[in-house]
Every structure is written in C-alpha cells, then in structure tokens.
Image 1 (cartoon, rainbow, N blue to C red):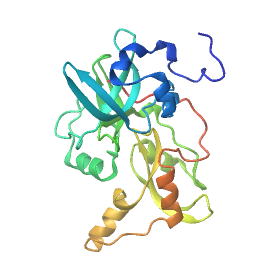
Image 2: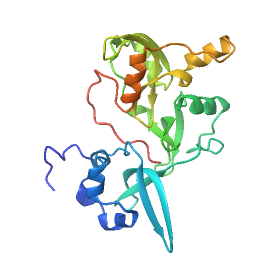
Image 3: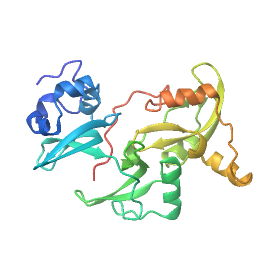
Image 4: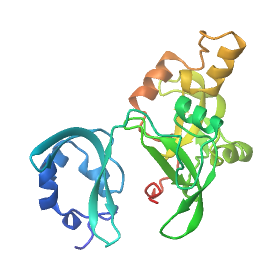
Length: 258
C-alpha cells in the first residue's frame, strides 16, 4: 500500500493486522477507532488507556482490562500484545539478566523509574543492551528502553539544560530544576527524569520525588515539600502523557522487546 500523508508515519498498517483473529477478543478496527487508540497502535505505541477485553477460553469467558500494542512475532507477522494489570511488579526475579538491588527496588516502587542504566540481555541477538527500566503506572509491568534511543530536550519549561544536566538525565537519574514556568506563567520547581514506558522526560512531584523523600527524612516524616505551584501540579496531571516542550520532533522507536 502506498504511503499517504496520514499513514507515512505509521510503523504498522491496518491491512497488516489479522482482524479476524482479534474478533475473539472483542476487538475490531471500528471499536479501536471509537476508543481513539488505533492511531497510537499503528505508530508503534501502547494504548494510553486500558481497553476492556473479553477472552473466550473454551467454555470459559474471561474479562479483563489491558493496554494493547502491536508487535512483530518471530514469523514476521503483526500480532496484538495484551499488557494486563498486575497487582505489583515482580522485582525478586531476574529481568533480562538484571538482578534488582534493594536500591533499584526502592526507586522503582517510589518513582516508577529505576534511576540508572544497566545491561539487559537480548536473547534473540545474544547481546547486552544498555537500557533504563521503568514501571508502567497503569499495568505495573516492567518496561525497558534502550539508552541509545533516549532523547533529552535542550530546554524544559523555560530552563535551558547544560551538558552536565543532560548527562544526568541520559544516565537515567532524576534531576532537580528550579525556575520552570507553567503554561499560565507561574514559576515552579520539580524533579524531572526519563521514563522508559512513556519514552520521554517526566515531572516527579510529591512522594515520587527524591527531594520529598529527603525532606521527610530530615523532618521526621509526614511533611510535604512544596516544590510546585497548584497550577503546575494540575498541568502535570492533565498532561502526564505529553512530552516536555521545545523538544525537536523525532521518530521514537518502540520500547525494547527482548
């Protein structure tokens, strides 16, 4: 199929999908369009929202909510992957060859990001790939993203980053920034960090922030550091799936499939 202005940015095309096999899950093209998730799927991303599914297993019917993504299997066919909800991520077992330290576990449970680059083993290629690890906040699934695919903007909310700050973010670590400006022109401070699931730099507020953790320890716990304005917090909740501004538009590869 010849690419058009609407399809040339897609990683997958609708005619590559076996819609007949998906009908057993209650999924069809029209429903995905109605839910406004088909575009993200074709671009190679997971759906932003959970999608209700109905699985028919013999005489049993299982209903579940999951995020969906399109993936290419070993035979080259495009299949639908279901990312079901977990009670919590399993951090006690190896993840592509990486054994989580106590600090890794603490960081993942608090902020959702492990906070460092580690070598993950790709069974298909037999190579170790430097990657960052985060937790999908909706499903509690562990997600890895290649470090060489990470993109850091020149500026975040009006604060221009120097080379040292960029390097901190590229190493997966959190970075505290002061003097950022919200959409309504209000100044605010916050930690920022790369999230492997979202594939961009996100803001860390409240208990997710290491600044908050340190303040609680220094003050005996129970006290909150006001690192952001009310407007900034509202903005972050509303736009939590949007990347930071003034980032050059790049083609984002999908998260590492190992």
